[in-house]
Image 1 (cartoon, rainbow, N blue to C red):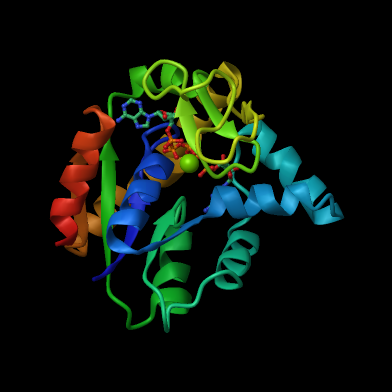
Image 2: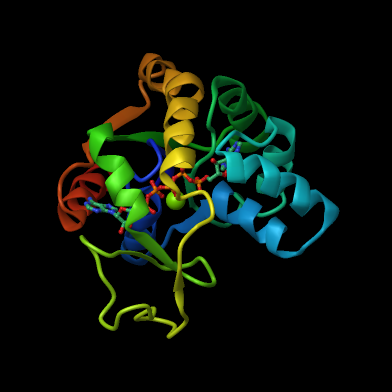
Length: 210
Ligand code: AP5
Ligand code: MG
């Protein structure tokens, strides 16, 4: 099985699908957004700097994110779904040269109608440990406000306001969308119709991984 990179705009379903595929194929899910939120929760000086950038919807520096990622993976014994990295061409080069080296990988593009994403995101709720994702409309918890798995309270991410989401979309179009051509030209890109229901998207991605 190859390692997998998920490329897609905010709210496209990257975290949701990574959780499902981890269970089906025993991947490890590594999300740079989650790693950065973990740094913030430590309350360190670095965390405070990261928080200011993330709360505005801009990208944290390539070097910082790459170092954090390297410190949290072990490609010699595990296969990963990389969710949120690389996020621009310069990170894609770091990814190839300093992280993957000879390891194989495939990039999966979440092709989605961006007009629907603001609504998806403002209705997102996550467990307070950040590990489980819900949606008030499309994927609600069994008991309102409570995570089905952990029993923890559901909360809203700080960067999930409409204003910040719109900036995150712009950053995606400017910085991340060029990765589509980048991976296409390397013959490493598969596309999934991420407007479909959650289970249907999982099936499409799973078919690339068999
Ligand atoms: P990150 O945490 O990666 O956020 P993102 O890329 O904006 O993506 P999201 O997590 O918002 O969306 P998702 O695609 O995971 O969707 P989800 O599955 O939750 O990054 C946050 C910030 O960290 C960045 O802005 C940046 O500052 C920083 N950062 C991270 N990586 C970085 C990097 N490499 N370099 C620099 N900075 C970096 O689903 C969304 C909602 O939709 C949920 O409610 C879900 O239930 C619902 N849903 C999912 N799928 C479907 C479906 N098929 N149909 C209907 N509803 C669905
Ligand atoms: Mg996510």
